[in-house]
Length: 336
Image (tube, rainbow, N blue to C red):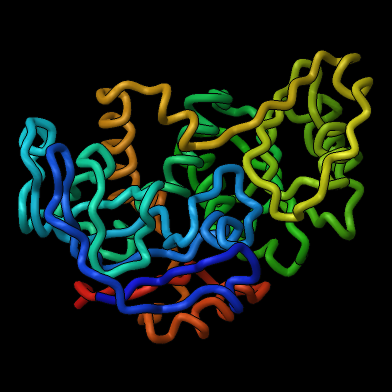
């Protein structure tokens, strides 16, 4: 079978290879084998290849945290039976160990989620990372109040757009920071209340103007670097900033006094760490909520292009463009 493999950390264009590898063995107790259909190329996947992610795999490794496939074989044990996981069942695959950019994967039955037939493959492939992160940060961790202001960076990203649509759905308001001001009309059509440019606007002054001086009680940042100072200065007293990404790969030049006076707080968020602290029932409830919001069109992921494994170099080149127009997917052996 074919699998994407890297033997050392570095530029994905230099170190990712498509290889013929042995088929995975039959699943052991508590495991399933999945014939993969599709997997997205997420920023976290490429950060892992570059050696910049928070938790790195043993080498050689295969990237790809999420995807969609069809169960091919089921090991013994009660968990798969309890959750209705059997051969032929389509599942979302959350593979934090072995990687999904392969034609077949074997993993714990805990890390596959049976999905309804009416959800298309491209939406199931992107079922978890962005939708769950957006829901958990806004509804579980920050618990953004109806009518409250949420300030976010990276608003033009797939996840940023989901936060905008969640705001319209749940009734909170968004101030959205982007680099390219030309995104403003597009984001406002999605439901963004305000769109600011990190290169043209003085963010704290504009937030003060928008909120009539109250500032933003909630904020999200996925960029890192010096720009976070503006976000901190835009927080209301006792405001909370969740940092969930480091796309700039730069440190935050933090003056503690900017937090102390107003008792503001910065917290880190990592979805996989949050999920470890949740019980099975809570995670099943989250999966049901994602499914419901997908059906309602709130958490749908726009797809820019789909590539085969043999087109991996073109897929990586497309992902690295500044304006992609949507998620890039890898089409695997089981895709129609």
